Length: 457
Image (cartoon, rainbow, N blue to C red; front, side, top):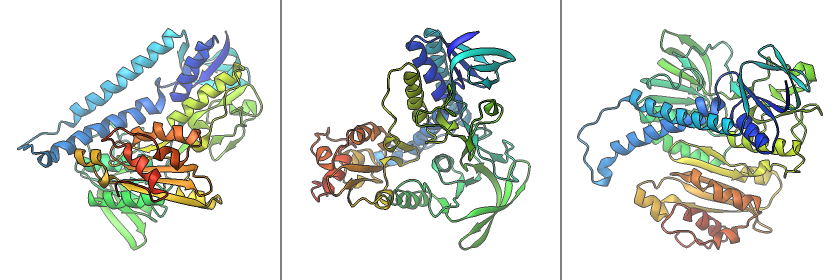
């Protein structure tokens, strides 16, 4: 069989590449070995956000007295909540399958591997394609000597979504997945301890954001142990006893469910990379600026290349590669303008450089801050934790980075993205007319605060 573009992997990058390919008139093949939508739709982004919404509703019920509502008793039906989660996943999966059918993409389930830069093997059938896109994604890292069994030791792919929250939990990793998991479990009553090997949680985010969030989570009875690591684990049938090396000596924890959230590695095995002499570094495929593998007709996108392991980056790369194949000369992806989001409560939203990164890159900077506690909408909703922070180039006011902590602040990332890609300045953002009352006003006020002109502080 002959195709114009063959895509291996139907996650956010793969299925978007397939749809865009078909839109441009290419005969398109999409191969998937597990589930359309990949990790994001089936185990990651979507089900975890639906679970977090369940937890937010639970928190609202618990705090109903703050709004003049007395709830004398209530029951938690965790499995019913999970049925809602899987219903969301089914609806989105059906939607994607419908889009693939609408655009006449040939979807095949099975294992695929490269034979050369124009040929793949799918279920032992050889298929030729003018161009090939690898979008096989990534898998959660394992910790040497610790088996993820889906019961006592789990990760987002194996067990985390399948069991009711435990009495006690150890979360290994203080990145986005670890912090979201910790907040969710604590909301359901688990006693949670987060173990982070670096000096703070969310180590890639701005230090002020990390430190504020740490204080807030600790108030919610989530223990944060930074500069710490697991040194021993004894597994029982459904729980573990663990020893943690901390800055204050060894700590022992009994009867814990262990959640492994220690990063990811690219799914490079078994896809025939040796047949195109692909270079692999730290488990990720090396590509050129056009996302080509070894100057061939093979491209790689998404978590597989490790640039920024985010679904929206994979989708942007998918469109870029397909339009490049079509000769449309697409604009290069600006990785400095990629939005980042963490869906704990309060949420973390950021784009661009942190204050520390701006300084290390040689910029002379100015910083503006504005607290959520001075925002009318946040106070009205009873969600006044957090703040907005804007980092700008002192020479011309260009926004180098924006960092938000607060309720639903991830919804402000669209506005921040536009400001970033247009090289917006704090003066331009400060001159915007925002709806009042709205959470978006914190961005305007933080931009004004850069020059000491914030109105409401």
